[in-house]
Image (tube, rainbow, N blue to C red; front, side, top):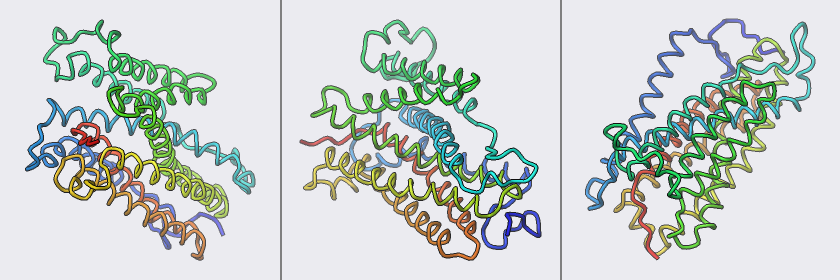
Length: 345
């Protein structure tokens, strides 16, 4: 049994589907627009009726942070899944094709997008966390004088170096500048004025790393299966999904644990129920929790199909829905970074 389908473009049991370029373009455009609306319109919606004030340009900052997170997920996921692909049994049995073929890398494009997003966020920091009206409003030299400024510059330079690494003979070296971006984000999210900032930064470091592996990994895994369609036996694709699913279960556990711990640090148990509905941060967090629960349900559905269905690649159907839901999670995560944090000790 191979990945080849009798009717192109139609899946008999949920496996990889080849669609027209126009259809894919329209679907991607709709999803990207929806994901962009969440951070752009989210601050005003979440803050409505809470009595809290929005920071200047909160929607723009949330959008830039969402783009930065997405640009981080893509290369991290590629490095992760390409490594898994090398350990897939049976992939080397392809006939007349180079073994272990992987899709064309999106990492160079992600590095450019991440660089632009990081540059935009740095410009906001350079104007004292205000929306710059022009170059004259920005104190570029002053970025070196503040902690937030140095972290913003680190992210800009890290994406620049990551882009250069993707064009080199050793693209895997981009893991180091990408790690620098994750560390910078973890430190930025927990300033020294916060109680136990290193604990918070450690939690965010683990949370963001696992999330990037999960989101980017699933996206690249599905791209890889699409490329393998007709090249390898069905078992090769099922093996890759199985390897990813086993690691994803651990990633989900780590994301849940660190997310819960971080939430309890910012919203103690005695106030968390109230804050989930009366504060902007709590409302956005509740939306994220519901989305993650949906993602977990889709992941379990895909894992069940992978184990029990006659065609293991029918797991691709819920996996594609999982990718879409994960994209919304990334957008809500970007929104959370632009909302006032209700810290109550």
